[in-house]
Amino acid sequence: MKVRDLPPGQLLSVGPETSVAEVARRMRTGDLDCVAVMSEDRLVGIITERDLVRAIADGLDPQQARSDLVMTADPATVDADEEVAMVAVKMMRLGVRHLPVVNKSGKAIGLVSARNLVAVLEQGSDG
Image (cartoon, rainbow, N blue to C red; front, top):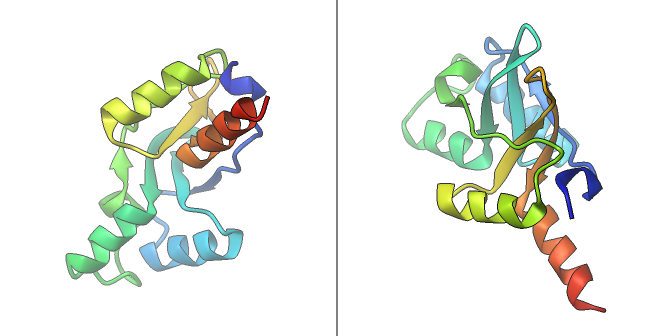
């Protein structure tokens, strides 16, 4: 099974200048645990729940701090042609739970999460 065969993961994007508080609000509203940080249609980073916790624990003011200060810059990505099994291995090797899906030009078009992969594995074990 390839990444393109997975249910599409919603990927919300914000700009690097967006405040951490606004990122958290958008994540809560969308019930998301990850957002893409985009600059001129290019993926420059991602912000996960872990990044938000780290920022607060480090004492950053979420109203003033910009997303580019707390994002994971230049995140690992996958493309739609990759095998799901290899994506799972990549996540485990990197110790991450989210990987943006990018097209050939590098634009983020979706998100694969560990939750997506577990759901696929559960469906596969029912048969």
